[in-house]
Image (tube, rainbow, N blue to C red; front, side):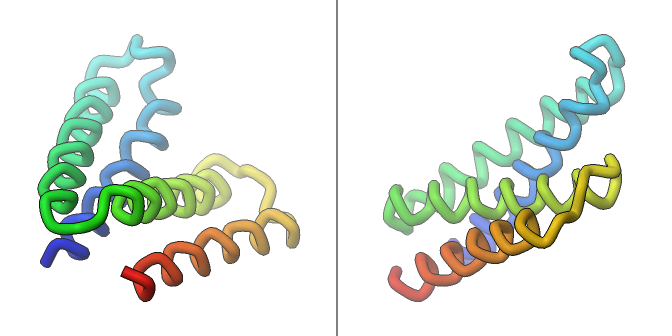
Length: 104
């Protein structure tokens, strides 16, 4: 259950990271509110997960999920480049997340 909370927290981290782009410097009210809510939900879920997971592992997995999700959505939604090197580095982050999960 704690890993599920951590995964969902990572998804919300991705949401607020991408949401920052849509706030236009916090000048658009709806994207700003949704981004702020995503931030709060993400951190609360992270906190709940860390009650039962090692902090170093939990935080690294949380940021890894957010990093991978943000990079992939940046490619898909924002037209960022999807070079072989970039995709390989995303794959390395995924491998690290899996490694940390297995090592915990």
